[in-house]
Image (cartoon, rainbow, N blue to C red; front, side):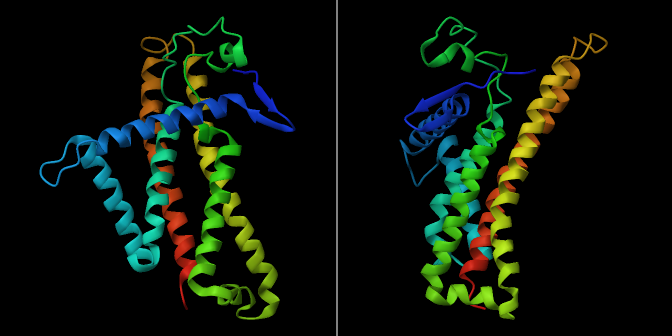
Length: 246
């Protein structure tokens, strides 16, 4: 089960190569899907891709409307749609078989042979670096929208109901990105590990490992969808708290 971590170095920076490659692939898939979905926009009978995109946008718009109102949260809709699509596709990526079929096993350039080895791909969200980046970006948006809507009054709540509560409010602010990052990372990483464990089970199962793996695979799809929903809902709730006047 142990996989060698491939690192890329650029100057003083170090990158987790497999996470970076999978992230680029996820972004490419989403971009292609969206471009195909909007290629033939119509106000009549939409195609399946346009229908799905409209559903995603309507879902996020309702989420924003219910939590803070469209007037305050309209600028957040684009980010939330991108966020839920990226997290969902990323969560599903580790469940897909390796479609390179080991054709890159002799390609040593950028260590692609090691990056694409194995029977399945990797979810970018199974790397704490990815989920931490998403969580930090979310909190930057939370604070910036709080300042945008309330100005300097945004910082007033750190001193309420008493200035002695300043430390508690700071800890609360810092704990939010930590819980966002570790919740998403823990669920997706654990799912990938268990799938690999199930695939190693002895042949007492029907078609060695196929039955239990199929059951866990379906459960992992459900968990991946739920986690993308939870991350998006919590992001909306945090922003709603920041822009609230009371």
